[in-house]
Image 1 (cartoon, each protein chain N blue to C red):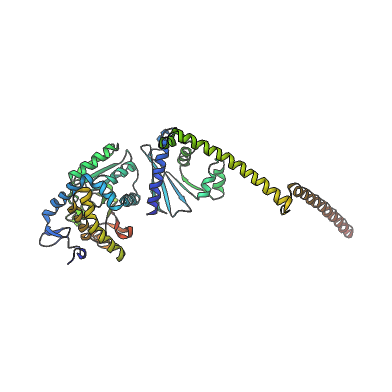
Image 2: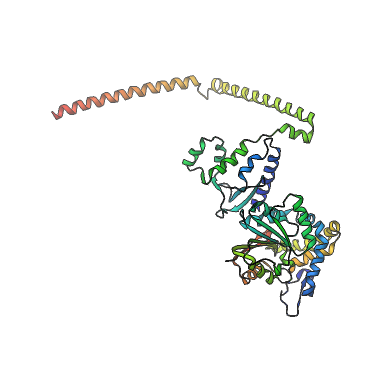
Length: 210
Length: 260
């Protein structure tokens, strides 16, 4: 009953998230009684998302037993992540990483709901741990975030120094660039020489023909 | 014969008797005895379901909904629907163009179900009918889906109920029977017996102040036909493409059949 456990968890998470959404559930009106089926390579069953009375319901069916959804998406988890960029949609379909059957607008409307979520996490957290604790936590996380960022950059710079100048395991960028330019020069010279040789060979052939 | 080794008795015994748990009673008596059980447990029915099954009954019911293939606009009969768990979900899935009828022979269970669903704001497409599964008060070919969850084992004449359900289904419609059944594994069977006969009645006494009803629950499960027998009964009633799926090691089974 893994599908049922997953669907139950998803339904609860979605319901909770929609309840916290500051932009409300008006976006669900246009999806009333519509359904979106999602078949992922990683799952042996198909998920069905349907909307009823401004509530998103999640069900599952075994592969190949679809009850006529309005839209059916066949893809994989990593491809879905790429869908964040709208211009990727056509490219992914052409590459065969994404297959859409039915009304694509339904899929887009579901995607818009996720994109347009506005959740005030601080207010939600404050309901559970209080305003002062929330403020302190946010400050702490923000401070930690900056420190980690700085630490990351420092480590990166130091590692770079060590690899290039101390251990000499990595060639500096300028040298790589210079090498690249020299290779290009040699390549151009070879092309010119090759053209010259061909020209001379042609001249010789023409002479023989005469 | 020990209580745990009882075999399901013949439904249509010649002497006009049937079983009520492990007791043999007159057929006319069973209905009122079962009614007594459910009048007693109605108020605590949902809590007891959660406690006894550790919440797993919700997953069994979800599995049933997923297997039903329900669509917007469908007409569904939730038979022996009691406190309306399946009805609540079906109501959302069939939408305003569909209809769900919650039918139960027991008025106390029906009242609890109706109050619960109305408190949840589910009023638009649900109707309530007090009905006996053996004599369904609906016209032929009415429903797209009929479900009966944990109710068939309480019916006096199961074959008659199955024929009645067959009559009210539309051609192409399907019946889903979710019911306790026979575990697949002997060790699980022994653990299940211990749990059913030693723990459940004590839980019933503690929470619902009624150990007898939960003793009946355990006994009625043992007297219910096993998976293959129920499948044959459905076929005899006219259902086709019948199948079943064991859940939780066969402790529960979902049977499905179509009317063509």
